[in-house]
Length: 198
Image 1 (tube, rainbow, N blue to C red):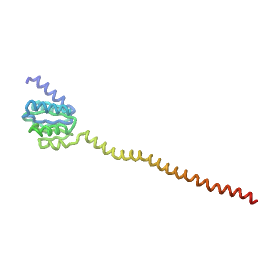
Image 2: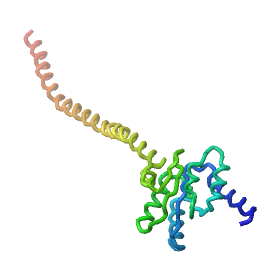
Image 3: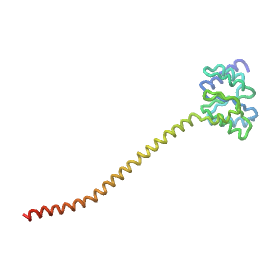
Image 4: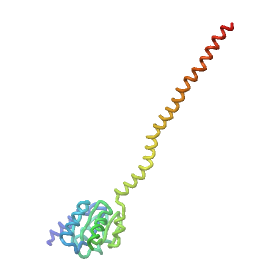
């Protein structure tokens, strides 16, 4: 690889890493071409960018990124390395776990997720269990919606109960009307009787 090619390769890696909040480095060594292609295909479907990189170029690119000190990850840059960049914190970990149901690889070398470094494959389960931003927002919305749904339900049922009470109140009033008319008749008779008494 010429010096110019290295500069271009480092810039490509930097472009991937720029503003990345979720960065994984995995070992794909041992996956044949077909399995490697399948892994990339699944990653693409999940909006995870995968790039096989040279360790020295990856380290140089990471050293040039401002705002994040990736040096904790450098010790894991040995052998075959694949850079994985995602929007979802647990996306790459779940992809690796799913793929490993049939294969021994990929293995997690290191990761930078939610401003925390994870070094070693033994962190894969912990990373897979991290709730993504979307999952957390969904849970919060669910928690917020629950009381709101109860209030809305109560409000929706309330007019029915008000109407029912109004109907109940109106029904006895209609029944009482004839009863009120009946006492008036004797009162009218008594007024008639009064003049006859005179």
